[in-house]
Amino acid sequence: MGFAYDDSNIFAKILRGEIPNDTVAENDQALAFRDISPKTPTHVLVIPKGAYVSFDDFSANASDAEIAGFMRLCAQVVASEGVGLEAGKGFRAITNAGEHGVQEVPHFHLHIMGGRMMGPMVSLRD
Ligand code: 5GP
Image 1 (spheres, helix red, strand yellow):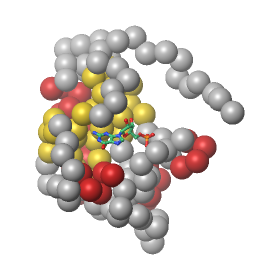
Image 2 (cartoon, protein in one colour):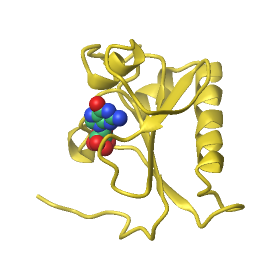
Image 3 (cartoon, helix red, strand yellow):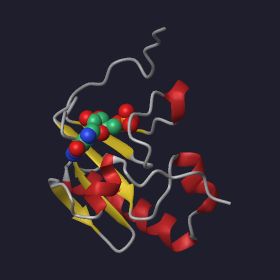
Image 4 (cartoon, protein in one colour):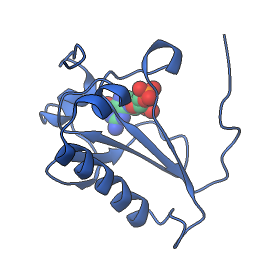
């Protein structure tokens, strides 16, 4: 059983080609593009092409091929952005889910962020 997915969200519109995006890489299962409001020199969002709301929805309900394609694209982005452990100085990969996770866009996405020293892992606010 999948989670309730609202296909009017902004990433669904990007996947349908209704609004433009700055694509970094793509495969059959996933799309990587630059965040419109980057918080770090490298700030790429990786999203599955399938309709999944959140990390837990994707992890539970996506096919093995979708999960593999998504993860391989993440690795490709880390390498091409030069932030991986072999060529660069590291990165942070974050996914927010739901209200407590402060998720703004209800289509699963992983933020790949790097190019500068990160702050504390979690900053709490009320
Ligand atoms: P969340 O808070 O859901 O984890 O992150 C949503 C991210 O999507 C934010 O970092 C925000 O800047 C980004 N974002 C929102 N709208 C757009 C858009 O239309 N295009 C792109 N490329 N990024 C967007």
